[in-house]
Image 1 (cartoon, rainbow, N blue to C red):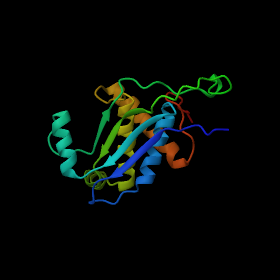
Image 2 (cartoon, rainbow, N blue to C red):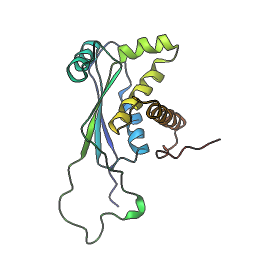
Image 3 (cartoon, rainbow, N blue to C red):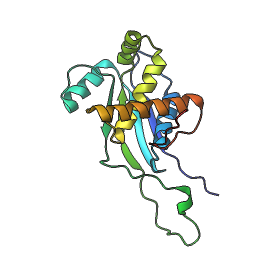
Length: 181
């Protein structure tokens, strides 16, 4: 059997102020992609940068001022939902055409130095802050927003669900499939 591709996250650490565990954050972003039912050929990047770099990106692309914690740069307006296992797939008689190129959905840029300051201000562990930023930025690639109160509540709940399932080592639930205790 040919293994199915899984969503692929590329990680890069382009800063030196704060040590980061790239493999952990790549795994977390892949967890979000799986939870959001991204197509198997989805690709994205999580890049950790310094204060100057994120400040420059914030000014140039968002009209912001100074450094921020996380930026998301979506490349797709709408990301299709991935194949459900019982919908079939490649097999005898399938097309011999080469597969489509991967679906690049965008980049999430995180500044660990800003995250460190925020974690100290909030009295939480730096890894918890970075985890939230990775999930937050990745959800923005899927169109989640927090401009309106109802959107913010939906996004924050989804962040909590994904962070909890990742920490527990359990598969992420699809959006809207919250288990009520």
